[in-house]
Length: 315
Image (tube, rainbow, N blue to C red; front, side, top):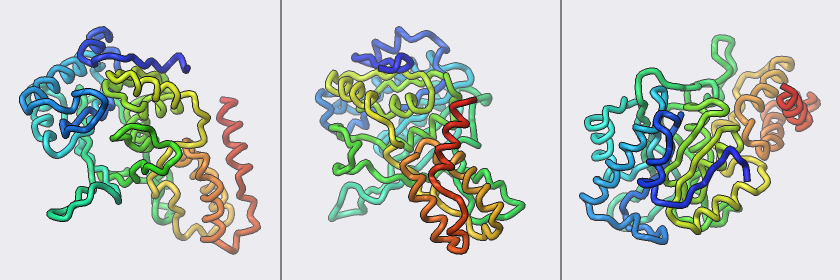
C-alpha cells in the first residue's frame, strides 16, 4: 500500500474530528444523495431533516480541517443541492466559485418525464486566495493559430465524461462509482504535488486512486468495510491510464500544416493532455496521421512518449 494514501474505516463524523485543523488542501467527495441507494448500511436512508443535520455536521468538520487556501468539491443530486448550497454559503460562509455540470450519455430511463443525464458538482473555497492550476486542466484548441494559447483552453463548467459502465474493466461493485477523470480534473486544478486531499465518503476509492497516480497525499474515510477492502485492492493494481477521459483531450487541432510545428505540437500535446492517459497515446498518434496523411512518414510514434517519460523521471 502506498504510504501517502491512508484509508480509514469508520463514520466520517467521528474520524474527521481526529484530523488536524487547517491541514487539508482539498476536500473532494461524493456523499450519499439520500435517494435510498444500497451502500450496505442505512447511510442513504435518512429523513429530510436528519439528512440536512448530518450534512451540516460533516461540512462543519470540513471547514475546520481545510486550509485557508483550500477548496471543496461536492457532488450532489438535484433534490438536496439547493439546501447544501445555502448551508455552504449562508451558514458556513464558504466562498462560491463554480457550479459544475457533469453530463453523460447514459443513465436512468423514464417513460414519464425526461431521463436525467447529468450530475452537479459544487465548488466552494475557504477564501478568495486559493489554489487553481489552470494549465494542468486545459483542453486542446480546435484550431492551430499563432494567436491562440496552444497550451489549451479553459475546460468550462460543463464536463462530459462517460459513466463507468458495468462491462468496463475498472468497474467496482459499488452503486455510484464515478469516472476517475472527473476527480483527475478537480485534483489537478486545486492541488499541487504533495498536497493533502480528503475524501470523507471514499466509496470504491476513486479519489484515492487519482491521488496515488498524481503524487498527492490522501485520506479516505469509508463506513462500509467491504468498500475499504475494495479500495485497498484497487490501489494495488497496475496503472495503464485513468478509466475515462474528456474526449476533447484527444482532439487534434485543425490547420497544423507545417511539419516542424506539427511534430513539436504533438509531442507537447502528449505531455500536456495525455500524461495520465498513456493508453490513449498510440491511438492518438494514429489519428494524427489519418488527419494529416501527407506527414505519415514523419517520425511521430509511441517512442516519443517513452522518451518523454524518461525525461520526466530524470527531473
